[in-house]
Picture 1 (tube, rainbow, N blue to C red):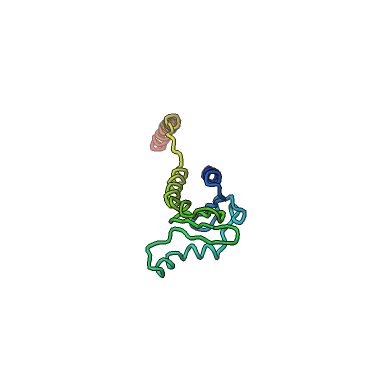
Picture 2 (picture 1 turned 90 degrees about the vertical axis):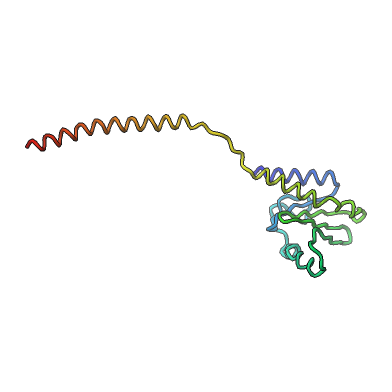
Length: 166
């Protein structure tokens, strides 16, 4: 599928440019592309993690803020940065020595651009098709049918005439 290959290419490019492992997940929890071993492609993210992400608006309300655009889970070895919008979740696996403010600064903008790119890929390529040959074939078929009906109509009239004569 073209979209999957494009998404995989985007994730590989992010991994190279940002020098970090990334994972892209749709809003249903299906992993679209990943360079993070803990999140293999075409699998479903853990329901517990998805529940945290899904409940982010409740957490925002509890904190009396409008929206939570990302959150970070810190382990002994890495940061896991979860960034999201309405349609996609981007997980980045970061080394502990990275400056998170620089990294997270434009991640929301990046996700919006990524969504636009995916929507462009989802639009089917529509090409024009010349139906003139098919129309000519249909007209020829109709003409043949009309000629046959004309022949039979003459025979029908002759039969009616003869039957009236008797």
